[in-house]
Length: 370
Image (cartoon, rainbow, N blue to C red; front, side, top):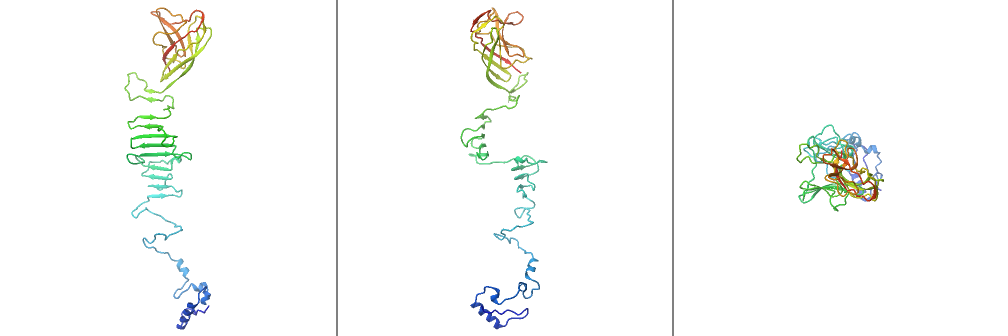
């Protein structure tokens, strides 16, 4: 490597010959290190140039770069962190904070203190905070508040609910084509009718399952209908039907049983009993049948079947009398009775005096319960 001549010190210029020799040497030799140039100056010495009174690094450290407006673009900032960054908006016209992303990565639109993952705040609703199990989307306003889901006039607007097993197990769907609102529960997409549909004419259709009244005393309210002067309730709060075991409680030497049927609508119970008790030995005592599904109220008058008792065998019918079934107050027992005109009240109807028979006691009676 040829020798490169350098200045002896500040204020000592190279001669013209030195310049020419240095150029020739650089043209013929490659430079691999400062020593190839004959430079033996220290790092401190290299920090000084002509007219500079302190090292270059010190002067750079003491300066701040000035960037003109619109001076940063593209990839001018890459991989670093900008400290103390604030913004008054997302465009040049903003005058206040529009969007806030806090340290928990919650986003507030119109608020700097979002209640949840996304909080859209038009104005304060008061001293209230979203519940923690419903704060993924919070929409707040001081007056009427709402979320709009819009589509064209022939398609659906939907809310879907799901989990890891089924991403749309539950759906609320408004059909803009026929103006129906459908509730789907635990159903496969587009398979079967919705669980409940609110029709365009305001009818409610329960397509699967039952309409269950879950609180005692509550039911279907018919208050829209006209009322009689003595109306005390317009709520139909009960319906059931079933079977019960009827027992021949008296009138025979034994107490055989048979099956009866009942229907209860509101407070009214209708009982039907037409099966026989098999072969029994009657003994001439009062004929009673126990085991009704509901007792008559204590404050109610006796319930009596309309018309005469028919199809009843092996009882001592009385001439010129009216026979009927009766349920006394606060009991669930039927008593066979008869009444003579001007006789002053009903009298127990007795079975035949003695004998083994296959009697048939037919009952169809309605009564009121509490």
